[in-house]
Length: 352
Image (cartoon, rainbow, N blue to C red; front, side):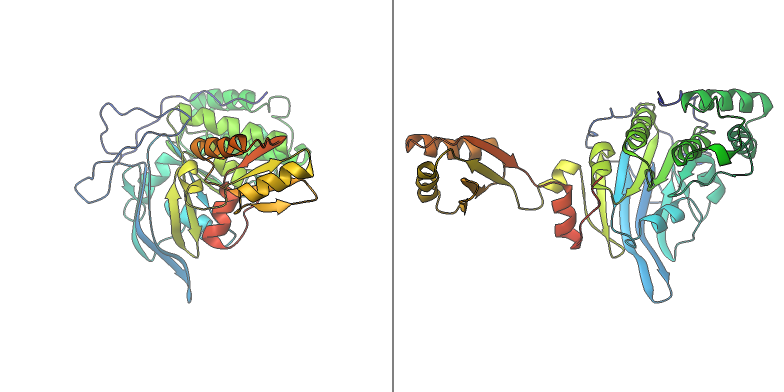
């Protein structure tokens, strides 16, 4: 059973603003809070993006995006392929330089202080980035040495990660013997070697089976409980709904919507109540009473557009009861992230 690894105390970022009395939210939805602005206009958010732009030739990949990520929360960047998700992560992790705008991670500007940013972050990309010529243990030790942990601390940290990610038995085997899921577990373990304060997960469950995917989600939840900030990019709607405190929808290089999953679901219409009846006579009576409903004779059912609220449902059932009509069954459909994604971008997201 893979569980979230115990996290040693995080090393403070050299440019992290002082935060007194700050606490991390629970793995549920974060409380609303405003971050105070520092003297340079940026905030003490774990991630702060202002008017960020990046083009490749004539193509604007990012067209002035703004985004704040509160410390100790998960924010998902949701978008189709080519929306600008990976470019955003590459800029925040100092792999790509923006054309204009500003971005800071833990108070460190990505252009003026890239070393400070790198000291605070971990990055897991879409595909496993492990060295396949080394064993799992050697990969982790290499990362520990690159992060200057020291020989004793490196050995202890690697031992902990191998156990927590269920890689002890395969630790000294070449990666040619690792399954794809094992390589992805090792990849994430390498990201956590130096206990980063901020983690970027770029399409972290690409190619994983359902069991491995849910294991990865549990690990992310455990990290957030310990105060780690996570920026997750995905086009998988279930993943965003399961993990994210807030979601930003990217389309054409712009953030077209941002909010909690529930806030985004309220942005679009599409909720309805479906009533099924045991006999045609009841269907006829209900259809006459609810003249705006959509009738399905074959299924002996009516579909009534609704916002999905309790009051709407109660009013509907009261009307039917007053007319002596009783449905045999009913179901309520509320807009989901797929509806939101389609309404905002014109494309369907990927359900897992």
